[in-house]
Image 1: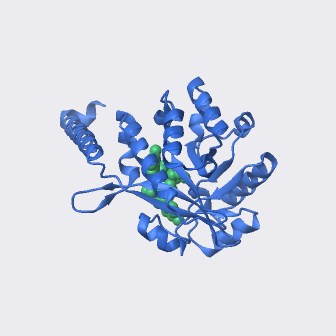
Image 2 (image 1 turned 30 degrees about the vertical axis):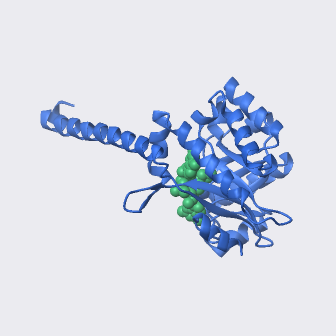
Length: 273
Ligand code: C2E
Ligand code: CA
Ligand code: CA
Ligand code: CA
């Protein structure tokens, strides 16, 4: 450690200082953006691969900058989670997404709406009430709402999260496990929850059909799901070859650039037509 010398430490120290300053700047611009509600919600279709019909749409938030450019949620959701700003931000996304989905053209099977919810949001004591209020305000049927949570939230088994989970499901809302397969090797915990859907993480889909481990994981997830009665969405489908393999594995729902990128509301409406 001595050989690293004093100079090295100072460089590290300076970088660290810059990081901290940037984090503070980012937090205050996030706050400001929340007041101005400059968070458009985009939608990515989830497709029934057999029929090509849009089965559902996932709401994906963007951060719109003054010059019109969009920042990806991957770059600000972690900061929003750390600062607690995810709670008002998540509420804004849910309200916007439900309001938009209420206007989608009515068909025999109008697409469902999937909304991402972070652990700190889900742990808020009044989260389920907030969701219920939002459904009532818009006259949006609970059956058409999916809430996407991550494995780690279930794994923690916090009392509050478990109560919220039950409450949402009693309302008729479906719970989907996002990024499935990335968190835990032991899947036994799934037995303890009655879930409606799992979403196979795109890192596994990306390895189809060439990587035997990915083939094996997808095959076993499909087997597990048919035993346990979950529906399955494969995420991140980019090629016809991936689509074909997934269909061979009896996976019927797919999401990815092969079908559509996330779209602003107006473009989504043209995609429906
Ligand atoms: P996610 O929930 O796993 O969402 C899917 C991400 O994969 C989206 O990135 C989507 O644009 C991207 N994607 C879709 N199809 C493809 C494909 O074929 N190839 C590749 N390479 N990527 C594809 P996005 O929109 O940048 O969102 C990133 C993450 O940010 C989301 O991952 C989700 O975890 C989080 N996020 C987005 N919106 C919200 C939100 O409203 N609330 C919360 N808590 N998190 C959100
Ligand atoms: Ca998601
Ligand atoms: Ca995902
Ligand atoms: Ca994710």
